[in-house]
Figure 1: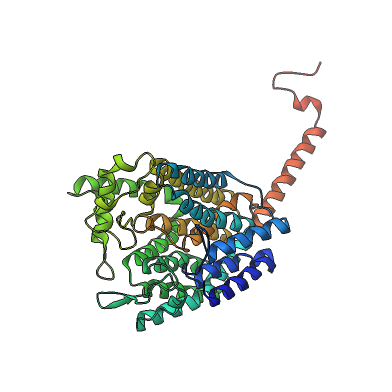
Figure 2: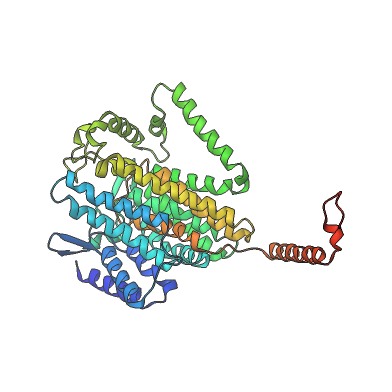
Length: 454
């Protein structure tokens, strides 16, 4: 770790410990947006990038200040803990040092998730974080746009990113502080709905967020982030037709089945036809799914340590693995079908919480309902993106932030509009009046028909 890395870690660590709970997530997000994974503190075989150090400081803060999760733990918290346990325990079927790498993943993902669960307790906290992210990404977007124009990455001084910017079809692909241009564009694409959610309440920050996130998507020069941005926008657009959501789900499922029946290739080969920016590797993503199915006997039980023979091409970073550009399949490579199914269970549980929160808040102000819907739309964008990329850098913390925001919904009391409160009071007065009339009526009036008092 260089001197600048120490200074950044010290400043953000002090902020994380000292600021009020409402602002405690800001230093963590600064570690995601402004620092690469190249700044690492090495202690024996353990590697602590800046974000992991900040998570450790966050837990110290929580313990010393006695902060707790609002409403206690729920089933999503326990599912994620079970997923983390399965990830670590399945390391016994892999190389002897696999457990160290997996403990690092658990520390980053589960640690940031539970810290966000502590820091998020109300709908206002979620809205506040949306505003923070919209402003926080503006410098990142400016740096990435300059990187795309000049071919120089200003974050290269911290290491962990390429000094020579990737060039495809004559255009630079900016990656900023993230490990890959697609991951940088993914951050922008999945944060775009946050900016749109703020439009009615805070147009200045919303406009800044829309410019920043769109700039990151454009600067990345990748088809995937463009598709994810469109997916998130489409999910938001369904807000006006949310009553027909079940019909849309059935229609989408039947369409996939119909396409699979009429296409010569499996339906996932539609990925090979997606190319927005030119030079897309959609065919590789489709072929990877087919290769994983053909080699399922190698990884279904507890994962595998060798996938290089799955595809004709590999990656420079790892000689024993092909490029696993699919987060679902990456779960399978780590821990087989058990880990993959647990990951899918986490996603389904998160969607279930969003749906239940919408039902409980059907009388709440429209802004609050749309905020809940936005969380679901961002989750849809991530779930779609998992088909084309695996998260392997600090960008995964933003996914943990989303899951923590969704996990906090059950503890939030549903709000009602003034009109609904007035109707509730009218109903209560009607019930009291009805009971008073029953208590004062003549006894004979309350007898069943055909009976008289003797």
